[in-house]
Amino acid sequence: MKKKPVAGKRKTKADPVVTEIVRNGVIAVTEEMKTNLMRTAYNIIIYEALDFTTGLFTTEGETISIGIGLPMFIRGMAETVKAKIRHFGRKNMRPGDIYVTNDSYLTGSHLNHVTLTLPIFHKGVLVGFSCCMAHWLDIGGTLGGMTTDIFSEGLQIPILKLHDRGKPNDTLIEVIKQNMRLPSRAMGDLRAQITAVKTGERRYLELIDRYGREEVLGAIKAIMDHSEAMARARTRSIPDGIYEAESYMDDDGIEVGKKVPIKVRVTVKGDEMTVDLTEVSRQVRGFYNSGVTTGHACSQVAFKCLTSPTDYPINDGSFRNLKAVVPPGRIISAVRPAPMRWWMTYPMTIVDTVFKALAPVIPGRVVAGHHADLLIAALHGINTKTSEFFLANFGPLGGGWGAKREEDGVSATVCINDGDTHNGPSEQSEVKFPIVVERYELIPDSCGAGRHRGGLGVERVVRARVPMTFNTQVERAHCKPWGLNGGHDATGNAVALRLDGKWKTDFPNAKVLVAHLKPGDAFRLRSGGGGGNGSALERPAGDVAVDAKQGYITLAAVKELYGVVLNPETYAVDVAATEKLRAAMRKAA
Image: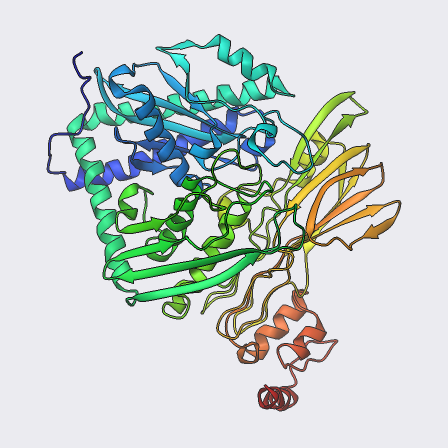
């Protein structure tokens, strides 16, 4: 059989003007894909929380541009495209095809992440792929509780054709609908994803038609080469050496109280970096595992933050000088049938630990530890007003980020795993679900004290209006966000339940896998703060006074942690008393 032509093989010197147009053009394409998905999706987790991303890929499956969104999807989407190329073969791909899968061990995440891929043809020649990965609210499987294998987590969709030359696979669609609790919403989200990948196809072809196929493909190659050059140059600014750090997760939800160890090794040699995750924990019995693509994504997210955080588009050229060592069977390279439902929690602490390892040699380019959890509550029950089943993921909450060497950490901001996802409006949740948000506020003293303090965590109290089942899987209650360079640790994450008017707070961790709430009962989620950076005794007394006046820190913390003496009514600094107190505290230390 004659091999189907693939574009981009002939070497072309890229025009610098066209290259810059293409650079911004592919970003615009993936952002429009995001916009169309957001505007047409049925579930709040997509159109409000923005738990999805989009991308354009080369004929080899290399990332050209991904929509600025969830950092951890960067490797999962690319490897899914490559797997579909291997599965079908380019010669068997046709215009109008759309391929689907939610294979957790391929995407690296849970079954809720459904990925569509569309091959893009220009005048019969394959020129790339348009791809979209989005979170479906329900994918079947058990509700609440702990899963211990992938089979209880929902419908598994292998790599299949959703559309064959433009014709929908009605049999597959019916199988999907049959396994969904809310099939109309699932189908709405599926159609929204189809819209997104078709948007990518249309806009990419318009770019090629306008500037020429070889010119655009040559520009993409030049963009990737430039990204590689920039990443190598910035890697050379990191001193050669081997750097290690450790942290841990509270437990796996089954063996309560048994820490899950994390240890990373980073090797820098010239313009190359290796992130070795060999010594992170073996995969666990609880559902906190993720696939090997997430292990690679941990390394890439950390590397991107350290070397080229503002270089766009995000593409595979940026990672050519990065090597990730991720042996199978770890918590970020789990093998079948390990459970994966809460895949996203452990990786963000691994990224934090990579920063921690490099903090001694590039202190100006890393942050202290952050709250590192989505703090999501899952709710389900029957809405007595409509007599309909409801299913809600309430979050993400946001929390404190670690301080930089020259800057305070940000407050109430979603964790690094989820990038640009949003904490949905309380009013919208109250309209859609039978709940009332009683409180949503920053938590005083949740930040780690330091010359630059960490960001503040958030407290949200939500009251049930009908009987419902509550489930949450929060981590890092005990492994608190660490400070750097003498900065203090922040508070950890926490959960509490108000049952019959009394608060229950004595949970051994922050996981409540099944709780039944009656009308009037409530749950409270508290996100941790961010670690501080530098000695708190070096923070300008005026800044401490402003923080106290704003309610970010209490008067007790002002004195005990920062060594500042304030007038409790005017918040004026007593300079002499402050100097005396700080001198005594330094001497005692």
